[in-house]
Length: 597
Image (cartoon, rainbow, N blue to C red; front, side):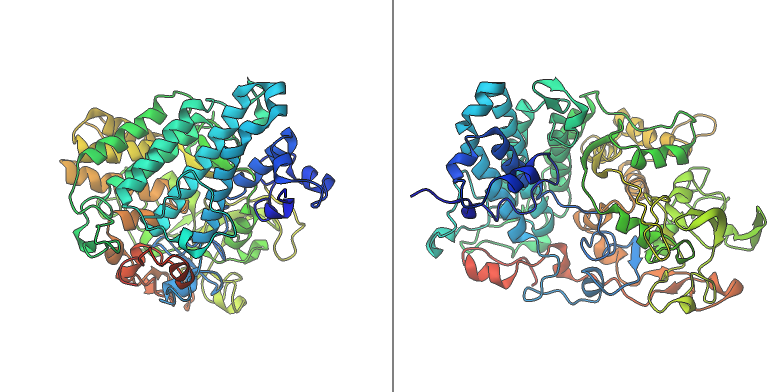
């Protein structure tokens, strides 16, 4: 008896977010008239199935009540108690109450991708219209997506269960589900190999019928596969996974260590080579505005979709929510995506030095800037500071504000705590980076949304991946400075070197490591990297805990004093990896829980 479409209706839920045609397919074909075999005989229905696999690529733009990477690091404090941020930061995370549980979701994506790979070769219609080439491309896309879902599992949970090439039937008996977690290094090698296989088939540019097509932007390409491999191998080379003796007790039920207990320097070489492979494609460039203005370059990177720096993006996203939550209440927003004082203090000065190193930095007094009194701690900063942070008495225009005006966060100001019981910045700052000023969907707004792609991978990250890995494997290699300086040059600050107007080259591997980490913290701020960086570097216990901001309970000059925020950013030893739910542990008794849960 043929299996009916209801067998795959769960797989097709949410389809149509990345590729065209899926909604049309579901609208026109009644669920009780098509069999699973028929899905893979028709071009449109097969493409709809692949669209569904794409739909499992997460929309990480929802930092408020969806994805905790920004609010649960040391770079931002969210005003509201909803979503995963507040409960995680105060310690209300455990295997029986797993907030932001993605284990089952990603495995559903893995299962869907594998099923597609097994059956797409049956599609006679595609073969007759487009030949084997398109079938091979679709299979490579699914292979990449499956590998990517494994990577997403690994960055959140560590070692995972590798399911292989067989699809477990929905009605499988419990005995068939008892598969242990693989060693992390085995997971890395498997995913890297799958990414290589996909990259060997995937085109350099999105294609339709063998021709490069702008209409196909969003499809997986060779560069995307290699970029994911770069991040995967960088994580695998880092202290969390490379000789981490602090988790020596993290073993499978047969006693096999799941995290390598021996440091391997060659892992850094693999990571460096993977990043260089993306660079050597020579199809991506750091985005630079024609005017040469660094702030316009940084804006264009995010708001000019499909530009030369973007590698892997999500077309469908919820960035309007990001916009309105980071927009001041004065402009119709909800005023609650707040940088911490810790990251404010981490932006470089205009001379290319950190505040603690620079004679330009001062917290004493104020300067009149265009008729507004601005604290001197906000002057002489690098362009990324002014692009990334809305601080007290900085100028804003957008949302419901048709003309530029200063934004203030002290107690009795229009954006302050006294003005609204929930919508206020708890640090006295708002995130400005990647905030669409044309989005106007908050209080009194006209419903306008500034749409753009959500960047998942970009070339700036790859440059920093390469510099970091090379510094660990081959300190002093010229490319370390070349690519670190490329980031700084685009940012509009002095580069490292011995010339006039340059900053002294960091002396030695440790000093260079510190500068690479500092650069990464600012260049990739609020893009979801810091959450994982502080874990893989194993510095989370030192940088998390009490976060600070300005004193939002005060008016006037008393505002400008560092005070702890109301909500701590707790980090427990168990927080290096997310807990696996008790439900999953009960279903598969061959897997072990993550350490210290």
